Image (tube, rainbow, N blue to C red; front, side, top):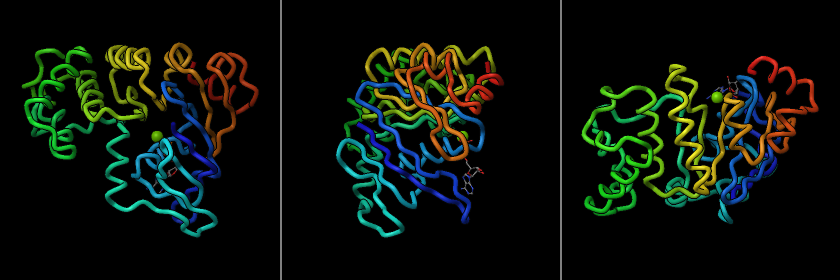
Length: 250
Ligand code: ADP
Ligand code: MG
């Protein structure tokens, strides 16, 4: 479903992605591990058009997110196509990024109504279903500031799901949370995975990766240095870098 091919990206001449390739199949959960600064967020942001890659290709289903080779632009999406494709990609960030002046339900229906022109009635009905799904039944009229970090992050997940994305990207969704709130967010992510949602998850939660990931990749210094089943990568890492990292987070 998602195909990332030899992606390069530099900031101010400093390479951050140095030829990253990966594939995510429909219904698969791929966890990305790696030290801070290895390029994980840049990779996710590139998939979601928040960064423009220098060279390489990113394909969602068969449509291009971007395709460049050796600096020559071979194909670039028009702004309308970018908007369409973004609607197919849900993203959940480390910080919850909810609109603070909107209620929980207004946060969730904003894109379905504003972008997809759904009727308010059907968007709200679906929004309430999603709130039940993330365990926040009855909180539709709360404002984000009235919720805990874990509850806000679950609203952020519901908001992303409201567009029925083909793939959900999670960028360290629990690392800004107090430890006692991490479990409730991971539980929602686990249930999504079980329901067959295609997911690309950057996380330091090794237990989650071990239990939920179909495959794990380990990134270091702008490259994928290891890839395999969760058991392989987490139990028998081949590279010293991976062992080193796991030694620190486990
Ligand atoms: P990770 O998510 O693995 O911690 P990032 O993708 O956030 O890594 O960052 C990788 C490197 O790219 C870091 O050295 C970071 O400072 C740099 N970087 C990320 N975004 C920008 C930006 N917008 N401008 C300049 N440098 C950036
Ligand atoms: Mg990051």
